[in-house]
Image (cartoon, rainbow, N blue to C red; front, side, top):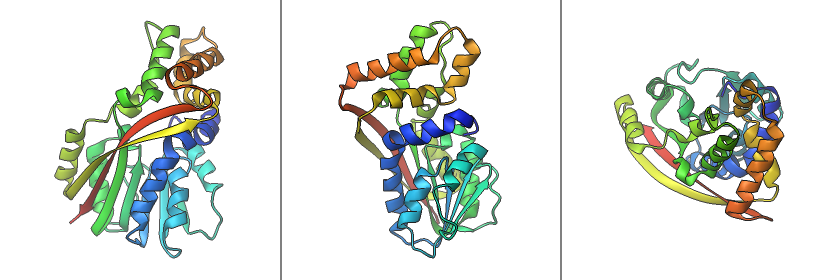
Length: 264
């Protein structure tokens, strides 16, 4: 998530995190912790939302390593942990993991695989897992089920009809199950369990949520095009969410796909 820098990181963590990532992160941590792994790696850890849930549930003596390619993301993640909590943060590339073979009992990646080469990344996870080790990751389902992408694109198209910023379409561009399954099989993983998980969240401050969506890396596309005040887009997007999903609260739907597999 190299595009998450400077003024993008805080709204991502504070206003997108509770809506889009906390629920799924807690579920991921529960699934990983149920087998009491000793060494866990989290890839594309971002601002440490899932990392915090993992550390809360893993055995106290378990070693947790969190990596991301964004310095700004990692800097914020570090602030969520005390020095004695056995969390190691590293800036690292998911396609070239800086770890020895068979280093981990579990590897986790929440909503990250759409941003890097999957064949290389899956191969690296397989290499660094121990026999019997688990690999869990999520992707967003299509934009049909995730209005942070579809509704945002509709609103952005009003402001930029001929050259609409598309960054928020990238996270939902990895929803086709079969290609991912085939890449996992080629990497050597077996068995592979796939589940679709729907969730609804009550957004109390829809304006803050809309602003955080605009101040993802899509803000750089908006600024490059020029001629539009980003706050006007925020206002239009917030109103679109209220009209589509109600107000006080806004009942926001989302849908993700979970992959769980092992190294035999």
